[in-house]
Amino acid sequence: MTAIWYDLTSQPSEAEEAAAREALRAFNTDSGFPHDGRKLAVLLRDGSAQVIGGLVGRTAWSWLYVENLAVPPALRGAGWGSRLLAAAEAEALRRGCIGVRLDTYTFQARGFYERQGFRLVGQIDDCPPGQTRFSMAKRLDTALSAAEPWPDAAAPRVTITESAAEADPAIPVLLAGLSAHAEPQAGPGNPASLTLVVRRPGEAAALGGLNARIFYGWMYVNLLHLPEDLRGQGLGRVLMRRAEAVARARGCTGIWLDTFSFQARPFYESLGFRLFATLEDYPPGHSRHYLMKRLTDGDA
Image 1 (tube, rainbow, N blue to C red):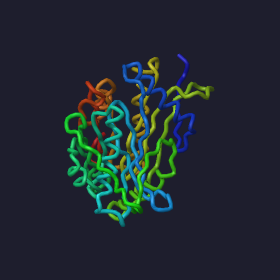
Image 2 (image 1 turned 90 degrees about the vertical axis):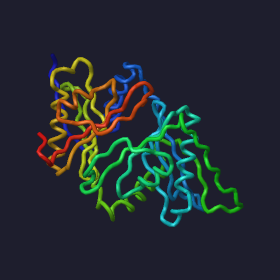
Image 3 (image 1 turned 135 degrees about the vertical axis):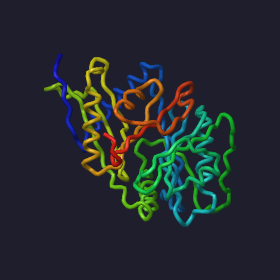
Image 4 (image 1 turned 60 degrees about the horizontal axis):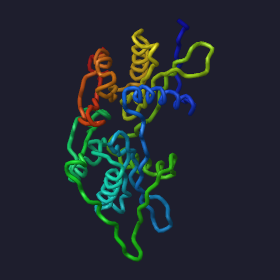
């Protein structure tokens, strides 16, 4: 068999990232779950049309995932967060979604989301150290809620619009707002990325690999995929062990990831990961499993 190798990089090219994602998407498609992701954004703009906050997410497999939701301090407590979320839920329903999921921290907005009908489905302690990351979900097919209309005054304080742009300039604004709110509580997130690309020697094309992000002292494994002819030979374990070595070298408290009932939960458990949350019916008829492995309390 032709030799296989991987390289470690913190600056993968767009083509390399796309190749790694496409490999996993191809596997999911072969399993009966083709990629159907669509961006969804509900943006807050001021009188000069500048984005000052909003919600950014993505719908896929009949669920909406809220990636970021930020309201500037001057507008908090006036119901804007509820309106943003309601508008996103209404659009998710129009797209045929059955639920909404998101993650929040002890220093963020768990109470707010619970008041909007979300329930806790799992958590990771010490992520970041001294804090807790909460995974929350809300079904839309069992408790439908009507979107609250925006004020129709002649001169509203802000307006809300939807964006489908792949690289909307609002996203850095949302991330900056969340960071400004989080850092006084949890310190800087110090984000970093890790990509391990698997290629045949002498070939530029990526066959698969691993992509992860590090923030708040934890590593999140976003993607891990190998083509069929490279499975069952220990290469997946090599990639995960290399990622764990990087996480340990960078002082991470632990590693977490999620996988589906038709994917690789037993593989991750064989590496010392344990289940901490499950989201049922995502995608419908299957489950999404959240697993973690601590690196600071004696785990091998």
